[in-house]
Image (cartoon, rainbow, N blue to C red; front, side, top):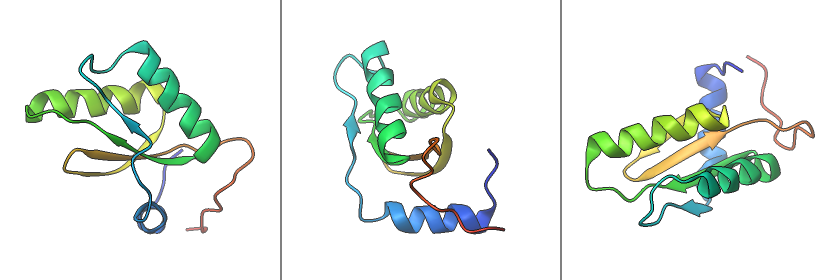
Length: 98
């Protein structure tokens, strides 16, 4: 699913008051963490994931892997926080038309 800039802005506005649902621990990105992110996306559609890493390249690689593995749309990265969107079959969040 490709989102227009206007749709991304709308979703970022919805994500602003949200707290990170998933936070990566010392083990980094594991199968269990990916499964939890996948479940959270199915349930909420719009989530924040916190990736605490001091190494910028490692943090970027982890965020790219999360986006790729969950097939979610990366809306924004702010510091250590990644905002993801993936529409579920129920379509809980109504996205404005382009």
